[in-house]
Length: 79
Image (cartoon, rainbow, N blue to C red; front, side, top):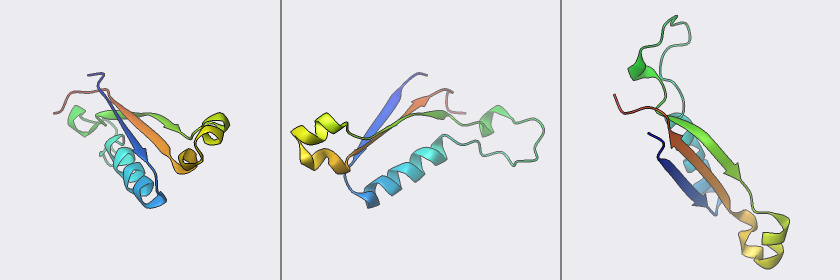
């Protein structure tokens, strides 16, 4: 537990794939109406960060403008 995964995406198509995959990993798979959620249906990860480059970074390196950093952290062991 506590392990982190970070990904840099430079194109919107790449970012869309990464965003969907990380969001899916950080989402419970239990049905909405389930009153008690079993441990094996709880999300194993939580979203930690989604960051864009700062203005200073873009001024130093204009190609960084399209970069997106996304990160997740493991909160549960695999079932």
